[in-house]
Amino acid sequence: MIVTGTLCGSAAPMSVDIQGGRIASIRPGLAPDALGGADTMISAGWHDIQVNGYAGNDCNAGSWGIVSPRQPDLDALTLDLARHGVALFCPTVITDSSEAMEHSLRRIAVAMASDGPFRRAATGIHLEGPFLSPDDGPRGAHPLEHVRPPCWDEFQRLQEAAIGHIRICTLAPELPGAIDLIERLTASGVVAAIGHTGASPACIRDAVAAGARLSTHIGNGCHAALPRHDSYLWEQLAEDRLTATMIIDGYHLQPAEAKVFVRAKGSERTILISDAVTLGGMPPGLYAEGRFEVKPDGHIVLAGTPYLAGAAALLDACMANAVRWTDLSLTEVIETVTHTPAHLLSAQRKGAVREGYDADLTLFRVPSEGPLDVIATIADGVVVYRRDAPQ
Image 1 (spheres, rainbow, N blue to C red):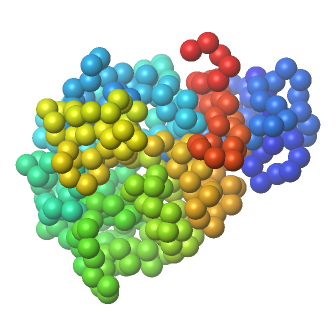
Image 2 (cartoon, rainbow, N blue to C red):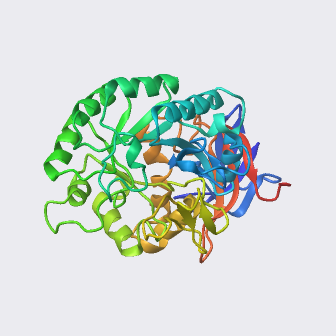
């Protein structure tokens, strides 16, 4: 298979030859009868390291009382994401009872061993909880009854259920036992991430010294009002050893916040994510016996409150916002969803369009408004989505 178009960061059209799931060659010029064209941009496949679910399909198998009208399907979730340019992603398991979390992790691990679209796209599991702050604000929408202190033995049970596939663990470093857990996670090769926290700046510094490398959806999962000084937000933004994930959807981060946060972290320490949830893309209305509401514009809140309950916009929208709202160039925005997440996860042969790399590619155009226009998404050399193909 050959795809053709302009590589991000290059002015000249190129043709990319894919063989056996790898990029076999890259040569100048437009190939005839190839996927793409002169008006098509080619990048490494977009990589979203925090996806809970989307459009009724859920990585969490019914957590928080959200019941899908159909059996949740991880392959269908993968196809929905691919329509928005996401070639690779980290299925995310959220705070629930130990039994429910282990069930979700086992289900994901089985799917990662299958021969379907999900296996080609999933790069590792992101565990978001249950070791999060119990306080209102930092806890976000995570249920208080299932938030619990960090415990290495429990993490090991969860990792066993996941058959070793947990690659990121988000936790609040101020909790008793958290610093020890961060050290153990780091030693085991799992990325320790700071999130849903009310930690002091000194505690943030201790977490980084223990090995924490990531700030999860910075600016969210925090108090509505923060002190002018001595804030865990400023401490994380100023810490160059922390890469930060950001949800630039206009709700979780608004334009001015996005511009300031990106300026603080720099393009090389910024990763755009969706944090999409199963209610994303669903019709407006109340769900889970009235606990959650999908607003007419699509964003999701805890019903009767202004508090967000997960995200609905996918990377095609968040990336377009980043181009328009921040100082990042298109090439830099692409890096935040390709090279940087691959580097964080030590994902070999991913995150770049290079000979010998895995053939994970996103073909797209850049419209003057709205989300990026996805033409095709390829994972592991397989076309997962092609806009002109029968759906």
